[in-house]
Length: 247
Image (cartoon, rainbow, N blue to C red; front, side):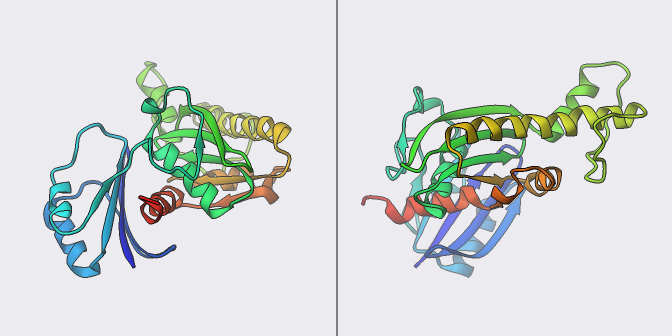
């Protein structure tokens, strides 16, 4: 059985075809139109589709999908395999819930801390009993670099540098890199340490566009053996939802 899974994020749209639990095709887009959707449907012939979006409006091409195959619009009432204790579930980002579902279905019976490093960086934990209580939202890597330039008169926009590992900068550019990259490293380590205090044997799952970057920053930490890279965790969560829909 082939499923079409679409994740609409703040910066990119990811489309994937799953055969049961395996991704057989995947592509990222900055934008997508009805013609491209029609091509994907014709090429891969999925039987069902699911769309998750951080945006409030529906995309015009969603109607093109629903005319051909059943289309599920992911929302916060889905994913019953996870016990959602978030106090305002209607405000919970779809991508955060889908990532938590992906963590639970990929590593069942384990406590998982999901760190999704994209436009924003989010921290969401789910315990071994599939209980989700909430998490944290923080500015992402690129957002932090751009904010320093936007809100000051003299600081330049610079790019992240995985080779920079010093905690102290020796000029303006490295001082910014130290503040942003080392600051994020210490932030991430603090969240991991806090979660480990409650759940000592935890999987730390890095996902999102900057996940490989942060894996590099954390490779020498004491938590490195617990870190797993799952770049398609949100897609996996959405595929789990479509497989269990109406169960």
